[in-house]
Length: 221
Image (cartoon, rainbow, N blue to C red; front, side):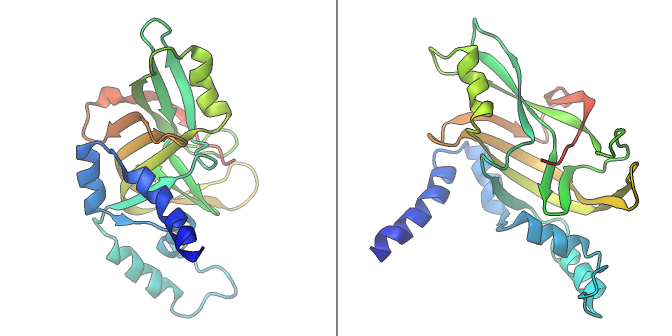
């Protein structure tokens, strides 16, 4: 029974890593797997504002940031947490579609973002340029099948990124500030949560047309 349980634990990562695009796989293999985004953001930012923060809190945070300077990290965003994904245009004739990504990845009280946000909307949410990822549905799919991927939370994201520093923006309503970690997104792989099939793939060095010029507010959910 114990062996079966361990095998089940190993199955999910195996499905996430199987049959991956070779270029993405090379980047992933160069990156350090990230267990918890929330824990990483808390240690990286190191606000040290809690009464339980030790005297060496800030020094520990600086040491932690130095450890990851210029280093690639890899994480899996489960389908239930992938609220930054939404359906874009869909072409019934060809089955071609676009998946929109707001590059704002929440973890606890903080978030990881693509680059450094400099503006917020009226509610204080950072404004970030959309990333658009193209793909084609299997033969026989309809627009409803495509939309169902999002309404029933069937899209999983795999992310490779390099942290670049801490940012903070004042909240427009209330006191305090919104804080996060700016990063260079190296690659994003979107897959079907149940089958593991690839739904879309994006790399940072692709032409600028791969990302949208319009900025969209990042909303915590």
